[in-house]
Length: 383
Picture 1 (cartoon, rainbow, N blue to C red):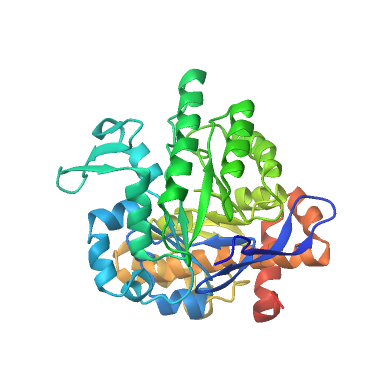
Picture 2: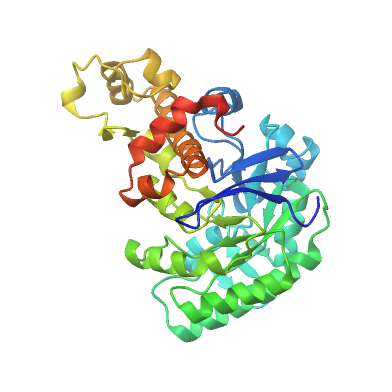
């Protein structure tokens, strides 16, 4: 791959929103984009065919830490790489494992060399350094891989955040040096907590190392949403215009609209799939909690405005029945709908940026109008 995988197509005149194309070894991704999360090599309750043909996902995310622990990256390599292993022939991004290590708390020890930790599966001891993380990701074979970083817990004192950010920069340089697969795009990650000067220093340092794309990490880790938005609005414009910008682990539909407004191109979050399994469903009438007894005799579609397979074929009554009975089909239908909602939202955002209506729709934000726009445009949206 070249060092400039991103092509800018259109910029919004009233905001920092933009439409582009991200070129990878397994195809071109239209941005802004939402990436369904397939942590352990599968998007829960979805077949690859559902993701491709019904949801029309363009790129999905898998996780280095979990695939390293089980089944092991060597086994994935023996299977022909992550694409063959999963049966998914479109682009894949793998996280470095930094956030998962952060979430282990007392089970891990961080040093300059890397992170020692105990497996949450069987308690065995492991060590991941920047070099090891890149080696694992090179072996897995995803199209986009991430530099190894530390995601510091919040709140935290300034001195720790500064030391952590500076170590993440050193780890980024080591990650780049260790990277051996030219067909994979290695993205750097910006850290720095909620401190503006640290965020700027992190951007400057990461950009000076040089990567084909940049991610903003360390947000949506417990801080107030207003503060998250402030830090995002400050940090995103500091990143290079000619490179893709990825906001990690965020978030709600409103978060995605705000992120796009700030100039973000890529998003991932477990929210649509996790909420689906819990029976919390995104619709143009707001969130529906399908377990509610008022849906027991509601024979209308989940969302009359939605064009997904679930809404075109099943009633709220039936979906509630599946959820109450803990049927696998319920999780499948709910997940299909929620991901369709998110993908439609992003398609609608791209359409709105192109036709000049995004700023107006983002002000409210009018999620319903954006979703409907994405559904109505269908296959013609990105032409």
